[in-house]
Figure 1 (cartoon, each protein chain N blue to C red):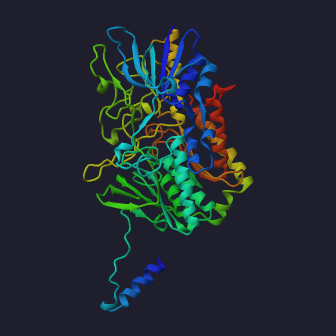
Figure 2 (cartoon, chains in turn cyan, blue):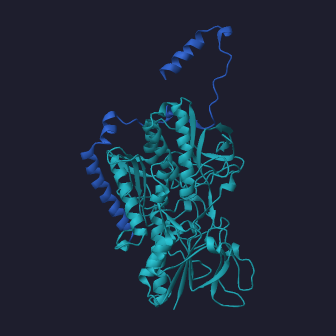
Length: 485
Length: 76
């Protein structure tokens, strides 16, 4: 009998757990450790953040789903990893602290035969003083944050209706942030809500980002075919911003935030401040606060994790110039190079390097996006690792064989705004692959057939369909495994 | 652009004592105004088509097909 422990119940961890339970004989144990009791379809938090959806529409309790599928759920936070065991046991184990109200603060060690680290990101608001819901800005990273953002936006709309001009700043709160696509989506949604409320003319909307140019999205921008031309996501995004009257501040790093005022520097070395009435700024991410220890109890965190706190996996982490970056640098099996029974998926794995060109201000401040690895890529990684572990447990293979490289998978980003069948609008993008492969796709690095950009109601319908489909799938209902990741 | 030219001409024609002494309002570092984007504006027709039901039903089918192909390729 083998025991697989999955740390984290986000898109990648939850997907891995469901597939492991589906593929493995019931004699084997699947344990999920997550500090949250709820599963959250994070892409729809954007709608919660503008008040179009309630938090209950984007979440559901994990325990009933896990009970139904025979997965052991422990509502706890993993704090330490002992991949070599200790003097007591040679089996690897993790230390957890319960967050479940009835057992809050209780600690436990959970042994494993295979471990999947899918802890997602630590929302590092502390990297920018004054950033975040405990400071002076709002966020849409969690459903709770998104509810606060919706309330703040409603207050701003009330002031606008009273004739008071308001400045809304939306974007990223640090030079090294990722998920610019989410900030773009939220901007698009807020702008739509301001129009719907009839107050757009009094509102100044500014998109503040660490991207070198609009449409970078942390993937170095996209190229796609449109009306007989190959166009860029830069032009496509700029056109949308121009049409909607959205201003932008590019190449920016937010240094600190005070009540109603943020201070920032830009790549050319300029420094400035900006007053605001509403600011939704995403935080930078880092790995969960996990420490690793060897059998003797020595701290080996730096060997197992990258300095960013993300787990090192089968990537090429050698430092090389941008022109030498290759698709093959990116991991495919997500196994730790140090421990063959430890895997890292979703945001929890350490990427070998960014996808966008890294840049620094004259004073050394890094102002360029970190690579995104959410949504479908996270789900695919979770599934591949579940299949590899199953093969290892059943003896079918002796090393992980299932691959899910971000250089061999696509992603979709649908920024949908509004409600109703005919009243919505959306900007939809697909890309293949996420990490450009200039050997396979000379010139643009991506397939011009499967990389697309489109604006219209069709994307709005698509986003609603995805919302319904993925929540159904995550609930593990009949036929869930037939729905793609 | 027309407004800027007109304003410049006015300033050029003014005597030194008539030149406004107030500095132009502060523009935040790196700020791009919508009019400064180089990208083209969509035409009224393009904007209308984005919400035209038959057109969007066709686009939905086309986007779904492309997305399905991309998803299948990603799933190996």
